[in-house]
Image (cartoon, rainbow, N blue to C red; front, side, top):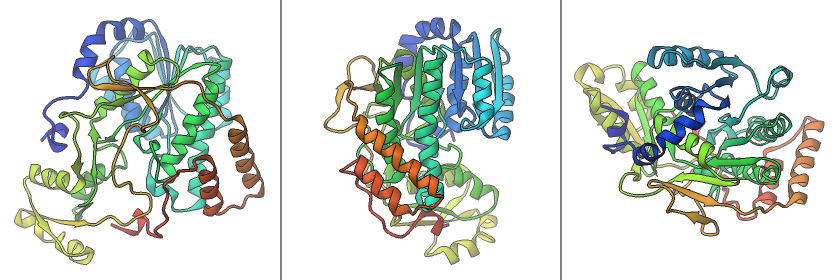
Length: 395
């Protein structure tokens, strides 16, 4: 069964928009130089492929994972082959001196796309990973924008998240604060971004976890009370490229909600997935039963599944791509909406955030409460609620 069918769809979401703009996309991409940061993650690979197949003059890809970079190159060579332009990958941490030296040695790009992020809600469980989330999602973005300004980059794209709209978790809030920092830099360089749904079967996602559980003959576990919007990896790449190429300064692209994009529960996808592999889902009562039955049920053509109510910190009851206070353009594209932002910057608030983080780091000691309180100061209507339970406490 194809990924589209598993998430309850028959056709790709952005077909009409890509078809209508394909010639212009090819013309612009083939004449341009690209740097993709975080290009070996699921979304980064999808974006890299969308650029590569349109024959860019230069395409450099940076990622901290050398294994994923190797797979990206193998995948591209096996599917698209080669291009006339300069295609290279670099195993670098964008927060490092080595990355700064890399930019200093070249740095000549027309478009910089930043897909690096700590994207998991579960990353807020401890203060140390949470501080790294702030570094990666906010300060590395600030740093790479400034480098882009210094080297004369024409356009900077950075991925956001639907969870930045009325955020309830620290990951979504970090991306909302990142959007504030983007706004400040938009006075010096053209910036666009995108908020989109869950990417089906992306690395580390719950759906990717289904695949891993099957390979390891372990039970499938999913919440039965949470519904989400899903895009496939190819669609995530198309959304980012469309925003990068066609987005005006401060634009945020997102998928329109229509009959093609609908909510579906993780439990429903799990059932479809298990059935697509030829197994009948067997609903278990608890974790112990699910683990025990994983040793015997598959031989009987059944797979143990445990569907539970969500009670962990940071889970949002519903998904949204924009707030009631944002101005929308719903006419330019068929299935892409655009949030049109006017320049609005609270410099004092941004300076306060930078200074507070700097002070906490200098002490080499901070608590989660310090960071949570800071986020509330940045986003007064932040809907964060601490339950004391995290995803790592479950299978």
